[in-house]
Image 1 (tube, rainbow, N blue to C red):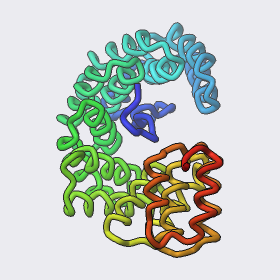
Image 2: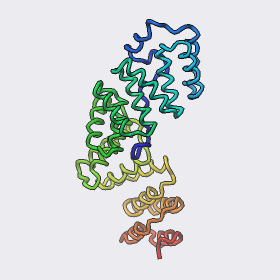
Image 3: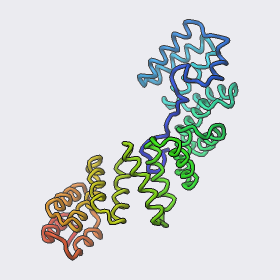
Image 4: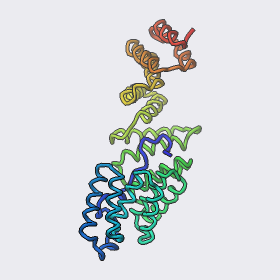
Length: 315
């Protein structure tokens, strides 16, 4: 499963660190009294090397060997669960994490990894409940807050997601991905009942995300629509151009840019260029084409008509 309009899968929290030091202090203390034999440590280090390369199966085999030599090696159990999750063996990953959680039931890192494994398994409801358990212990965990909000949006709980994301963005004003999701949450919450306030809030979130280098074509197209709604036409055109740089095949965005260049900017050359791009990308909305031709001050009307007719969009 994936979240609605999601451009980032649930993030793996620092819970999934690949080194023993990445575990919470309580867990480290739990295995300190029985230091793994040297050979188990060697297998553990080898597993970490495979994990860094993204070879989950090889990493899993190495961690399993470490655990065979030292069953109390909590770091190997933890990293094995990570490798199993990434390899798609979710049930075994959850078994390992459940065993660790019994030993340390308030370990944020273990609980976050368990929630992530549930998400990857496709059990969104259980994953959301698990992330909320994490937040009950630590409501400032950035990845847990983000992931909770993402799942809340998927569950239709936009207003709750907004509250979580506002808390996250207040605490981490440099988290562009959180601002991007906040914009989408506001849009989802106000769908069908948009207001100037909600439009302004969504746009502010999208702009902040863009400033922080975290944007995508979907967000840029939405920004363009909000700019146009506020009669901020140059910014709308800039946003559409940026969206098309990221995804040149967005036919609707290219047509929107053509319409603004022709009707608002009175730039026939660039407008016709954008219209050609839209048609080449497969634009096929006859109603939108008719609305464009109905514009009283449309420049190069005949050329616009001919282009649309060539694609069966005008008669």
